[in-house]
Amino acid sequence: MKFFSDTGKVFIREIKPTLYDPISPLFSLAQPIIFLALLGPLVANMPSAGGDTSWQWFVPGILVMVVLFGTSMTGSNLGWEMQTGSHERVMVTPLSRSAMLVGKSLKEIAPLAVQTVLIVVIMLPFGFKLYFGPALLGLVILAVMAVGLGALSYALAIAARKKDWLFWAIQQTALFPLLILSGMMMPLDYGPQWMRNVSTYNPVTYIVDAERALFSGELATNTVMYGALAALGFAVVGLLVGTTTIRRATV
Image (cartoon, rainbow, N blue to C red; front, side, top):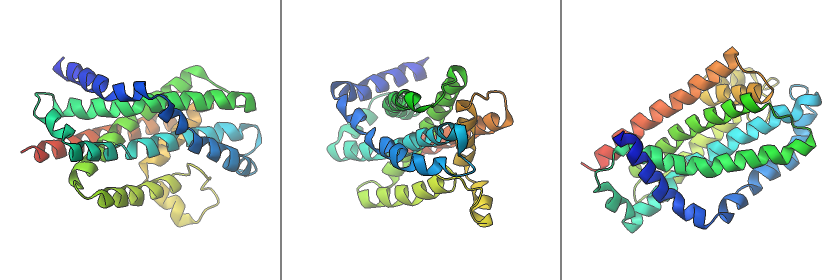
């Protein structure tokens, strides 16, 4: 019970500034909208993603991209808190370290959830079909992935303390291979064999495939199961690494 209580306290503390400034999350919608407007028509003409289901193929990839970009940058907020001393004040409290990570990650997930819902609503007039039940499960899988990525981002921020350039260098270096080698934006079916081989070792690939299956109305399939397991893997590894890092930082 203490874990959930602490998570709630951290979440409320972290989400308050966002509630007072709701315009910022809306402005962050600009990037996915630009991708949808400029890349969507190109992808629609590709055999692997074209036809009547092109938006069913492309929009889920955009949703994964929103979560991947959003949560991988959350450590920068922690870096700012460490510079101002806010983080140290929180660390002297008896709050559970794992609850702190989950609470902070949930704060990042809430605006992202709103953004993903808005993207789906925006795309409905353009022929995107919403299968409510499977889509809801898709959002849950994204939320689980976001918890893990957010925790990893916080761990990176602690490890790169007082070296902002190092945080961004590692974040960018890791982010783009994960994005490109998952087939998130472009299908890899006609890419080089080595790219397709590498993509099978990229856990994001399975999450992207699961989101596409779910947003196409599929539910009880192996593709969905593998995607859920990949998201769970992100969460477990992220929380383990994040909790270990934050505890060592306070020793």
